Image 1: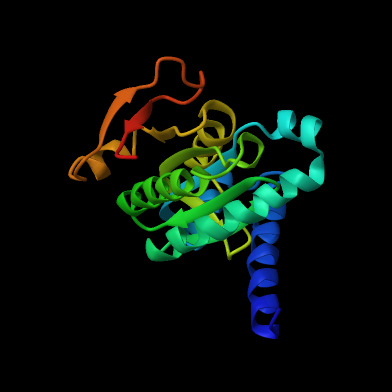
Image 2 (image 1 turned 45 degrees about the vertical axis):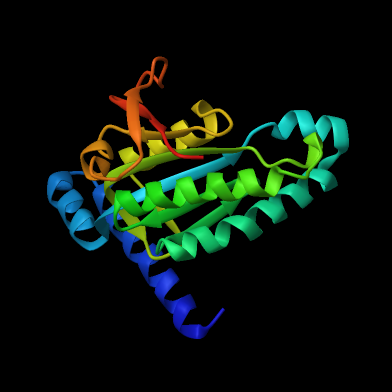
Length: 209
């Protein structure tokens, strides 16, 4: 890691921690501090969370090393899709990726490309080696802490949709994504029948595979 990147990351984190500490003080003007935090760290992004279906089952049947191989292979085939659609890979946690996009349309295009790449990859693979991708996408105002982490309602919603709700091959999006992708050709969407209780609107995309 370069010195410049270390300084940037630490500066973001230290500034946020300083404001949070100030907010905790007796008599603090929390509304004013909140406005300052959003002014410094608030940005509008589309956020994607991915997950690989069948983690627990495959680990139990074939061992963790086998699944680590699947994780590495998935990242290899997904990274070109992310780069081609101007995504920024923020975090990798186990079999999950967190990726930012300026525009929801590019997040959706990336998700479709990843699913299509997965289908091609799986053609000659045995069942245990197939990659089964789940995707959740949100869009809205979030707090960005350098390139370390992001926070916000749409972050939480996208995480819930991608990591907990979506099944293999599904791309689920929050309601805020829909107005931004209506003009994309070849896709449609329908309300999710059983979405997370605290996600106001969620939809499942129908897309070319």
